[in-house]
Length: 128
Image 1 (cartoon, rainbow, N blue to C red):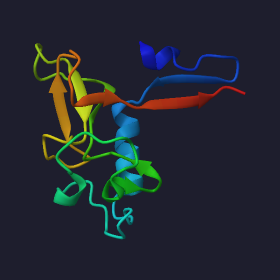
Image 2 (cartoon, rainbow, N blue to C red; image 1 turned 180 degrees about the horizontal axis):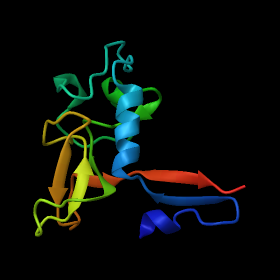
Image 3 (cartoon, helix red, strand yellow; image 1 turned 45 degrees about the vertical axis):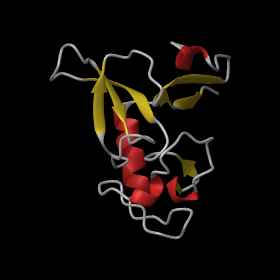
Image 4 (tube, one colour; image 1 turned 90 degrees about the vertical axis):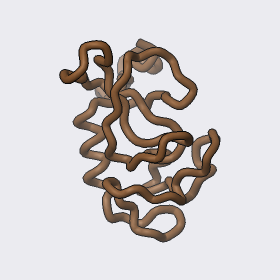
């Protein structure tokens, strides 16, 4: 709910990024150069993107691609997508985090309880 009310005025609305929007980002950033001039692969794990601890956004150049930070190695991110395989874990989060080495495109599931390694990303809709 925070994501839907973060910005709410006559010109811009915010929302939780959807799973489809995450997939579009994966298609855009895949095979682009990261902040260390290495090819960013959203399917295969790159150990250098996982620094082993929490970091402020933008501190890990290896996890910067197309001016987007932390898709793989800082925090996993909740998306507006429903898990239809496990009733007890109805929510989906994407990417990897500082503890769980996973590629940026990875789908994880959970029950939406707050965790120390999961956050969310906003999408902004321009109204006018």
